[in-house]
Length: 183
View 1 (tube, rainbow, N blue to C red):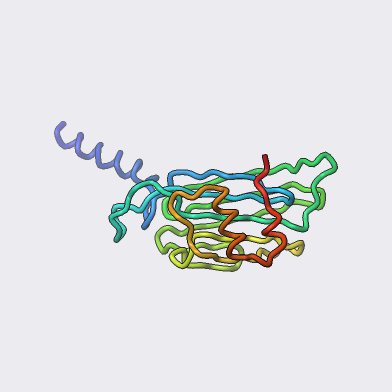
View 2 (view 1 turned 45 degrees about the vertical axis):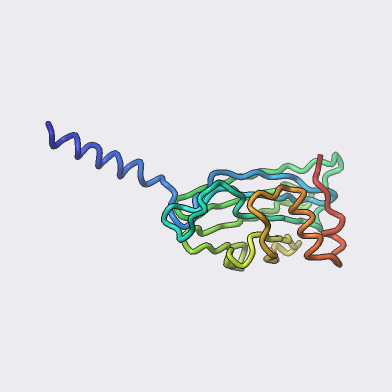
């Protein structure tokens, strides 16, 4: 009987342990805010450095900021756009998915953060998050996703600070300067 208990604990650890997040960072959640006057949103992913990383800062903080813009999409006559959003905080990869059902068809955006290599993949582009944790994703009518990496925001910035930062970093972009948080 003594040999069964350690074996049972080992098997339970293997089964449960498979779901634990691994990599340089642990993501604990995210929040999203819709934008106006266009279809789009701001996502903020929070978490902390893992104990395996080379940093001693393991306090919860905002680690990734993504602004998704669909400027050429017309809102329905009612002003509503059906949106479906999902997040997956997998073992090594955090994935954000947004899908908008619009009058001109479905628009889908997927952002993947490989927390092991600390790289962000959006469409066909890949970025090193260390070079900036703020991203702008523009959805083109052709289905192409054009991404831009901007300078990092602080660990506790919110939606309003995201807007201020992208305006400051893109002062001549009329679309960016027109954005507001949807109330």
